[in-house]
Image 1 (cartoon, rainbow, N blue to C red):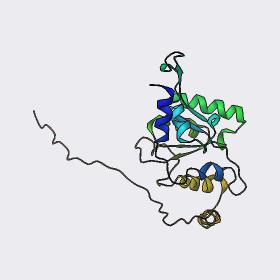
Image 2: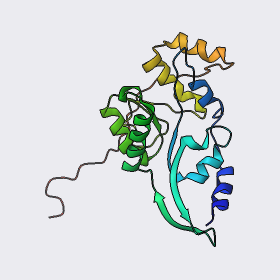
Image 3: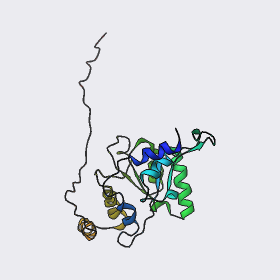
Image 4: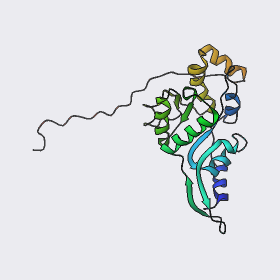
Length: 202
């Protein structure tokens, strides 16, 4: 596997609708400014290629490889920002940007986000799950399910900016979008089995 192969994979990644607008809108949400960074367990070249022109390469932190100078093939892993690795990268970023812990917003969709979400919650930040991942739902402070990347702005606008439903709708409309369906539900997921009678099988 060579760097060029990873770049090609990134070009084939299917991105959510309006992902290009998300970093731009996050820079000014009703007077509040947010810096957009990406922490991923995927190879850095894949993520950079997928988000080319959307997120600057120096704001993307993924699994980093060392390449053989002769063959160009992967020789070793330099860094893996997954699990506790993401926690370390996040803390480095927060220190470098002088961001208070309670001003951190972390959006995740997979199991590699569990540790960093617990960390952000402990420090008073906002965590948002963007998938039905069963490990994230009990941890994230908010969960948003949508095919549109802009949907993750809703909990930010509510929790940090302080907008109500009407204000959020108005802000989206000011950018040419309409919140057509917005359902707030609490979902209980259960598995129920018949109890084994006491003494059965003896």
